[in-house]
Length: 154
Image (tube, rainbow, N blue to C red; front, side):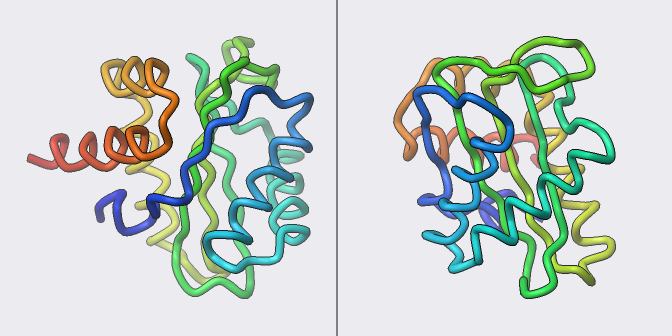
């Protein structure tokens, strides 16, 4: 699986700041509606429900919120870079500025886990994160993300 299969060029966004997780999830929901035609309210609700099980802030300024949705056909990714890091209840208590959200069909099973593992591996790469934090152009961010997974696979 390659990141380019789950992340579209227009599903990458840069936000100046976000006041809360819920506000961030609304931004992700709006982006998912624009790019994938998904209902934003259902996305916000699903992400909030998953977050209630335990924070998806994995440390080092990275969050990987994810949820399953009944009316989705394939795994879909959305990436948000925050210019101003926000509190996210991360495991290392550091604020988050890189957010990769994954939405998966209710029945995705192993595909959801493979996508989550791929995103996690990509976001754990310090060089990739440095490049992501150094750029504010969504097209450049998309290229960094999709090239990172291609070079890791080689």
